[in-house]
Image 1 (cartoon, one colour):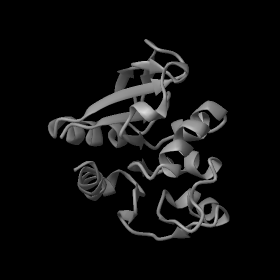
Image 2 (image 1 turned 90 degrees about the horizontal axis):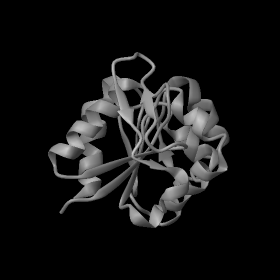
Image 3 (image 1 turned 135 degrees about the vertical axis):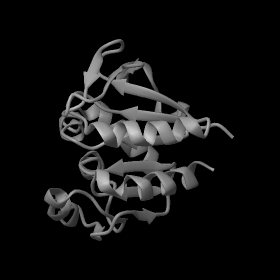
Image 4 (image 1 turned 180 degrees about the vertical axis):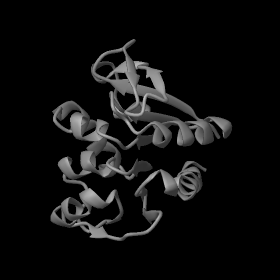
Amino acid sequence: MSKKVAVVMTNMFEDSEYTSPKEAFEKEGHTLTVIEKEKGKTVEGKNKEASETVDASIDEVSPADFDALFIPGGFSPDMLRADERFVTFAKHFMDENKPVFAICHGPQLLITAKALEDRNVTGFTSIQTDLEYAKANVYDQEVVVCHNLVTSRTPDDLPAFNREALKQLQ
Protein backbone atom coordinates (compact mmCIF):
# COMPACT_ATOMS: atom_id res chain seq x y z
CA MET A 1 0.00 0.00 0.00
CA SER A 2 1.34 3.39 -1.04
CA LYS A 3 2.39 5.73 1.78
CA LYS A 4 2.75 9.51 1.83
CA VAL A 5 6.24 10.54 2.95
CA ALA A 6 7.02 14.10 4.04
CA VAL A 7 10.57 15.17 3.16
CA VAL A 8 11.88 18.18 5.07
CA MET A 9 14.94 19.73 3.48
CA THR A 10 16.47 22.94 2.27
CA ASN A 11 19.63 23.89 0.38
CA MET A 12 22.86 22.06 1.16
CA PHE A 13 21.24 18.65 1.70
CA GLU A 14 23.53 15.67 1.07
CA ASP A 15 22.68 14.82 -2.55
CA SER A 16 22.80 11.01 -2.46
CA GLU A 17 21.13 10.88 0.96
CA TYR A 18 18.07 12.33 -0.74
CA THR A 19 18.21 10.81 -4.21
CA SER A 20 18.91 7.20 -3.21
CA PRO A 21 16.03 6.87 -0.68
CA LYS A 22 13.74 8.88 -3.01
CA GLU A 23 14.39 6.39 -5.80
CA ALA A 24 13.86 3.41 -3.46
CA PHE A 25 10.62 4.84 -2.02
CA GLU A 26 9.17 5.78 -5.42
CA LYS A 27 10.09 2.38 -6.89
CA GLU A 28 7.85 0.83 -4.22
CA GLY A 29 5.01 3.23 -5.06
CA HIS A 30 5.33 5.69 -2.20
CA THR A 31 4.71 9.42 -2.75
CA LEU A 32 7.19 12.03 -1.51
CA THR A 33 6.33 15.65 -0.75
CA VAL A 34 9.30 17.99 -0.39
CA ILE A 35 8.61 20.61 2.28
CA GLU A 36 10.63 23.77 2.87
CA LYS A 37 9.86 27.37 3.81
CA GLU A 38 8.88 28.37 0.26
CA LYS A 39 6.75 26.36 -2.18
CA GLY A 40 8.07 26.31 -5.75
CA LYS A 41 11.63 27.16 -4.71
CA THR A 42 14.42 24.98 -6.06
CA VAL A 43 16.70 23.56 -3.37
CA GLU A 44 20.15 22.33 -4.29
CA GLY A 45 22.35 19.65 -2.79
CA LYS A 46 25.68 20.59 -1.28
CA ASN A 47 27.56 18.70 -4.01
CA LYS A 48 25.40 20.31 -6.72
CA GLU A 49 24.56 16.83 -8.06
CA ALA A 50 20.87 17.05 -7.19
CA SER A 51 18.19 19.69 -7.00
CA GLU A 52 14.50 19.49 -6.24
CA THR A 53 11.52 21.80 -6.53
CA VAL A 54 9.74 22.30 -3.21
CA ASP A 55 6.23 20.84 -3.32
CA ALA A 56 4.81 22.64 -0.29
CA SER A 57 5.57 25.33 2.25
CA ILE A 58 5.78 24.23 5.88
CA ASP A 59 2.84 26.60 6.48
CA GLU A 60 0.64 24.67 4.00
CA VAL A 61 1.03 21.20 5.45
CA SER A 62 0.03 19.26 8.52
CA PRO A 63 2.02 16.29 9.78
CA ALA A 64 -1.31 14.48 10.18
CA ASP A 65 -1.52 14.32 6.35
CA PHE A 66 1.57 12.10 6.11
CA ASP A 67 2.40 8.51 6.98
CA ALA A 68 6.17 8.99 7.45
CA LEU A 69 8.93 11.61 7.72
CA PHE A 70 12.25 11.55 5.84
CA ILE A 71 15.12 13.88 6.86
CA PRO A 72 18.10 13.76 4.46
CA GLY A 73 21.48 14.75 5.87
CA GLY A 74 23.98 17.41 4.90
CA PHE A 75 23.74 20.94 6.31
CA SER A 76 19.99 21.11 5.67
CA PRO A 77 18.81 19.63 9.01
CA ASP A 78 20.95 22.09 10.98
CA MET A 79 19.39 25.01 9.09
CA LEU A 80 15.86 23.66 9.48
CA ARG A 81 16.14 23.12 13.22
CA ALA A 82 16.50 26.87 13.70
CA ASP A 83 12.86 27.17 12.58
CA GLU A 84 10.36 26.05 15.24
CA ARG A 85 7.81 25.08 12.56
CA PHE A 86 10.08 22.26 11.32
CA VAL A 87 10.92 21.19 14.87
CA THR A 88 7.22 20.92 15.76
CA PHE A 89 6.49 19.11 12.47
CA ALA A 90 9.21 16.51 13.13
CA LYS A 91 8.23 16.07 16.77
CA HIS A 92 4.70 15.08 15.72
CA PHE A 93 5.99 12.00 13.88
CA MET A 94 8.04 10.88 16.86
CA ASP A 95 5.20 11.51 19.33
CA GLU A 96 2.72 9.61 17.14
CA ASN A 97 5.16 6.73 16.47
CA LYS A 98 4.97 7.26 12.73
CA PRO A 99 8.00 6.09 10.70
CA VAL A 100 10.90 8.56 10.75
CA PHE A 101 13.99 8.16 8.56
CA ALA A 102 17.01 10.34 9.41
CA ILE A 103 20.47 9.89 7.93
CA CYS A 104 23.82 11.57 8.63
CA HIS A 105 22.99 14.99 10.17
CA GLY A 106 19.24 14.32 9.90
CA PRO A 107 18.93 13.47 13.61
CA GLN A 108 19.89 17.08 14.46
CA LEU A 109 16.29 18.08 13.81
CA LEU A 110 15.14 15.36 16.23
CA ILE A 111 17.65 16.52 18.86
CA THR A 112 16.12 19.99 18.75
CA ALA A 113 12.65 18.43 18.96
CA LYS A 114 13.82 16.69 22.17
CA ALA A 115 12.56 13.42 20.72
CA LEU A 116 15.55 11.09 21.14
CA GLU A 117 15.77 10.42 24.87
CA ASP A 118 16.24 6.67 25.50
CA ARG A 119 16.13 5.96 21.75
CA ASN A 120 18.73 3.83 19.98
CA VAL A 121 20.23 5.92 17.17
CA THR A 122 23.22 6.61 14.99
CA GLY A 123 24.35 9.61 12.98
CA PHE A 124 27.38 11.18 11.37
CA THR A 125 30.49 11.07 13.56
CA SER A 126 30.41 14.80 14.32
CA ILE A 127 26.91 14.66 15.85
CA GLN A 128 27.32 11.50 17.94
CA THR A 129 28.27 13.51 21.03
CA ASP A 130 25.23 15.75 20.46
CA LEU A 131 23.08 12.61 20.31
CA GLU A 132 24.56 11.49 23.64
CA TYR A 133 23.76 14.90 25.18
CA ALA A 134 20.18 14.40 23.90
CA LYS A 135 20.14 11.26 26.09
CA ALA A 136 19.98 8.89 23.14
CA ASN A 137 21.75 5.52 23.09
CA VAL A 138 24.30 5.99 20.32
CA TYR A 139 25.67 3.19 18.15
CA ASP A 140 28.33 3.44 15.47
CA GLN A 141 26.78 1.09 12.91
CA GLU A 142 25.38 1.37 9.39
CA VAL A 143 21.73 1.39 10.44
CA VAL A 144 19.91 1.51 13.77
CA VAL A 145 16.19 0.77 14.02
CA CYS A 146 14.39 1.77 17.21
CA HIS A 147 10.65 1.21 16.97
CA ASN A 148 9.53 3.72 14.31
CA LEU A 149 12.93 5.42 13.90
CA VAL A 150 15.54 4.44 11.29
CA THR A 151 18.92 6.21 11.42
CA SER A 152 22.18 5.84 9.50
CA ARG A 153 25.58 7.58 9.42
CA THR A 154 26.76 8.31 5.88
CA PRO A 155 26.05 7.74 2.18
CA ASP A 156 27.95 4.43 2.49
CA ASP A 157 25.08 3.21 4.70
CA LEU A 158 22.34 3.94 2.14
CA PRO A 159 21.64 0.31 1.12
CA ALA A 160 20.91 -0.64 4.75
CA PHE A 161 19.07 2.64 5.41
CA ASN A 162 16.82 2.19 2.38
CA ARG A 163 16.15 -1.47 3.22
CA GLU A 164 15.07 -0.71 6.79
CA ALA A 165 13.07 2.39 5.82
CA LEU A 166 11.14 0.37 3.25
CA LYS A 167 10.35 -2.25 5.91
CA GLN A 168 8.80 0.52 8.03
CA LEU A 169 6.63 1.60 5.09
CA GLN A 170 5.15 -1.89 4.58
